[in-house]
Image 1 (cartoon, one colour):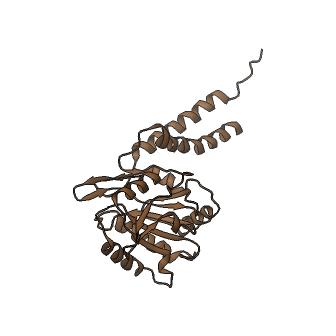
Image 2 (cartoon, rainbow, N blue to C red; image 1 turned 90 degrees about the horizontal axis):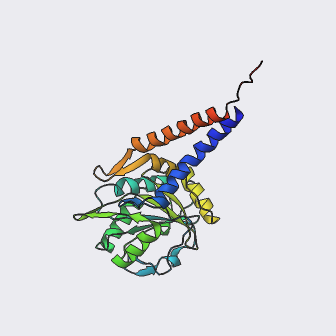
Image 3 (cartoon, rainbow, N blue to C red; image 1 turned 45 degrees about the horizontal axis):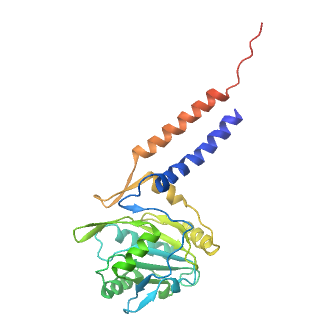
Length: 260
């Protein structure tokens, strides 16, 4: 019986991991979504444009654990709740932004300029009701070449639809060396998730967070511009789990001794 319980616990851990691995390595990459590039490094030739119109090298800005938020400022859908949640977690976290970590917003839409980035920076900074270093949360734009370099490097997949884009959202953490360490998916973040991501990034550690497991249970719906519970995927995992448990029970069940 102990063997069955132990085997079941192991399966409960490895099945989501295998499913995640399948998502990343053994199935085609999604047209819209995020393919995690954990332990990979950002190219050192990505250039972005600050709110003053100055061109800066992205790697030169990584002097502390950094969360990169890839958005576009005209977005009519997911970007607003995503950025509101970023402001909320900055507000509620006891970590000092600009000192212990920083956030870089980067627009992947090459048609957007500094007027939009400056306006968004001012608007979202106003949502934080405490003193903080404004240099800790900066907003940028970029051109098409550098946008593609960045989105390819972090696995950010999007699709143009008319004048807008279909895309998902995540805070992507990178170390001072440009190593991708963690993804916080979705549009809601807990201060504990932020702290864990910052601490582990500062140590150069990488790994999936609980939000990665949640993102496996929820899929992004481009039509509805939001996340929906993936019943088919979760049901498949549960069926597989219980099928294996039953199999192990039958295999490992002690056989009764036949007495003469």
